[in-house]
Length: 226
Image (cartoon, rainbow, N blue to C red; front, side):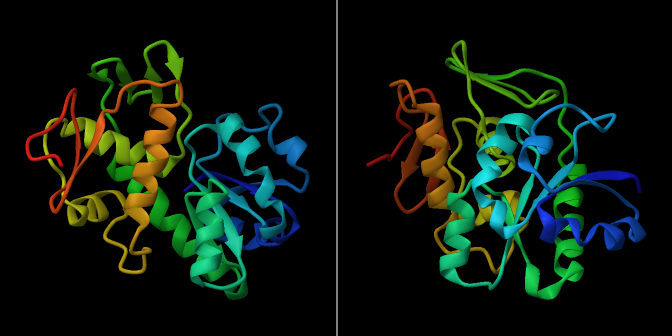
């Protein structure tokens, strides 16, 4: 395994030696400016690990590295900490109190999900929404749409089953790998994030809620939508 992992901030950087022993290639960046400029690696990192005190840097990291999974360190697994993690733009968290063990587990999870979801090169399209899986580019008309890794996987699932109503259980199973510890409202939160980004310039709605059944991506109202 030679997986490049970007470590942002001192607390993340302190785990570099342990990650290297596990086969990863740590790229240490204690300053955000260095993490968002240039290409010290031959390719983009496959995961970005962020220290708790660098939470405010996630937006800049997202602009630099696109939909690469971002894991934010949190001190405790509480509802408030999870909420702050999601609102920061991170895709997941790692518990700093558990040292490298929790981080290594979550790295394996995200890299395993990415491996199973290697996308074909075809263009996926609905109305003026376009997704090119080969490069993970998302556009609404001519406007590029920047998504987090989790938002992208959710959109991709909806787009590949466009016109079909997907239940919350199926979305949780396929996008969150059926994580039993996922917050109960996590799907609603990410559907809201997607809608905000896809409709940022007043574009018409493509993601619809079908009460009691789930969500549907369609060009027009699906059947039985309230």
